[in-house]
Length: 465
Image (cartoon, one colour):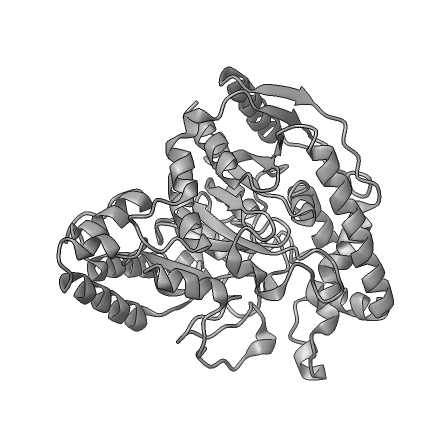
């Protein structure tokens, strides 16, 4: 068997060139998944479906002439996996909840899954998520907790925790994630990866449910890539955006290749969290050091770093209501309710008790916060914040607490991410340093609307500074 390249970009090129087959590649990563099952990254593995798809991909390539091979899809034969929140043909979808069993294989693909299938990617299975994608850790009642490859006693974050663990642990070359309050960036920061949260509407498949949720709040959840490098993130991101052919270099990939073109950006630096008026928010020494290093390196690259004075009003209360109001729309039997995780059950009860009028009022008020944040952050080209406030907590550190204490710890661990979803702007998580414990600590950069390419450029610059 040919050697598997380290980078996803190199692997994609090798697959298109025929230097390695899709079948060999699928076998390799399926072997990695089996060998590292203790990471809890996967809740189901579709080995037979994946190998069959890989064999067909190889057969299609073999029947093409040299000239015709330029039409191969951008992710020809590339193995990926999808969060167990998305529908994938032939795989069950639990949404991380015991209330959804027994399960049957899906007969359809979710819109984002369909885009990547058309781009030539091959799904190896479904990755671990928290119940209904609700929390910043990936633990539930249906499968073992997802664990951090940097230290398996710790969480890899959530809700894309299983996907991040798979990429960081070498079980996948890269993976699509989704982010409604930090669910790409939190796991990326926890596992030492690059994680890009695009702006609202930047991914065409994200628009299937419109720009607002059922109560009229800004649609918080978007999809984006988790990868080891900005180059790999750009490749997957371009495919997720609908770039189908490898010969048509995507705008994000082109931007990373020309990262040096971005000079003299004005970057506001902020350690102010919108949760600070409600919870005690403090940064660990490693989180402070990562931010200091990022500031120093960005200044060394010729960018202009500026102090900021942001304020966020009653954001924490409003966001909490909107974040959980959708739970009131879930219908369960009394028996099913007993299967819910404690946090899900309590916050659903509160959402129901508030009633539709109150939930709609919170949704309307969140638009005011979104506009205010966009105006504040728009005073500079980018905003630089810490990533996570501390190292990843241990497995069960959240679930051993009461639901309210669980939620408070989530806000204290990831105090800078959800606000970007509310504003609908793009942001990128960038690993900056390795701690003495072998963990990763990074930063977040927030961009203006449509600045995904520039965020990838800044990340590329930081990682090579």
